[in-house]
Length: 286
Image 1 (cartoon, rainbow, N blue to C red):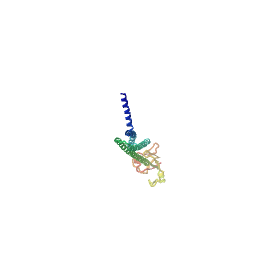
Image 2 (image 1 turned 30 degrees about the horizontal axis):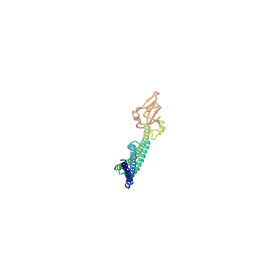
Image 3 (image 1 turned 30 degrees about the vertical axis):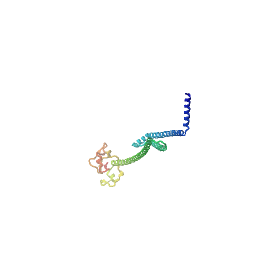
Image 4 (image 1 turned 120 degrees about the horizontal axis):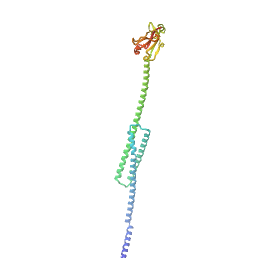
């Protein structure tokens, strides 16, 4: 029995040795090793491609907050502050650099997929989606840039208009001030009146009266100025009697004796009294 077992074992060993030493076995072994190497290489390529895909997707996700901020700023009606302008520039630069990085990585993925032995429909679809997303975000960034530039132009125009309006208001205010000064001066001039009094001889000598009437081209420098005809309603004459030479409406004035027995001219209605002339000439008798 032991001889039989020993014989079988020896026979099996001899058979196995013969198989391993055969050319067919060696060929199969080499093919198996080649397949194992190819599988390992394919697995490594797949892992690298998946790593790149995940990185590209992560990059797209990382720019979302920057895109949201740019979208809000592009639609805001308020003027952009210096700090917001700096942040906008930083976000635009970040999104631009990230999209450039993704563009290169997608090109690398395309090249890797072409050169690899991987024939995955799902990978191809994923790569197509990444290309489409890259195009959309590139176009979106261009649109946001244009909207921000448009907003800056609009704000600049509004600022210019405000400045122009401010200048117009300032000019109008200055013109109004000048006009008001003219009005005040004219009003003051309208309120100014002049008077003089003297005996008949004095008035003739001063060439203010001629033939009992107001002389033409009389010397106005000889008159006393009344700054406000509305407030000065009494003119003391320091004489016993008085008579008007200049023309003034009857009833708007009267000669009244004061406590010393001298007369004074009292004006009852200044508007009416000075309506015919602003130069009052009174002849007095001492």
